[in-house]
Image (cartoon, rainbow, N blue to C red; front, side, top):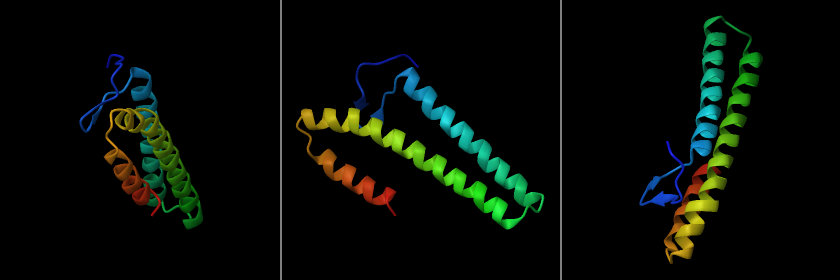
Length: 101
């Protein structure tokens, strides 16, 4: 991916190479953690050990969501508001409600 000045185009996000790499790196680590949990289940690991690893995956996903949400607010939301699209605030509120469940 090449670096772009524009952040959002309709409902598609154009990310810089650095943003893309950061998100993919986090997701790859999370994917590895989930595979590790599966291996623990397959090997009959003790329940609390699995639960601790599961909590670590939840924390990693929350960190991923915070990074993505922060980037979304700093770029897409700000740009839409500046362009007069106040509807983006309602969309953001809906997204926050889903994330906080």
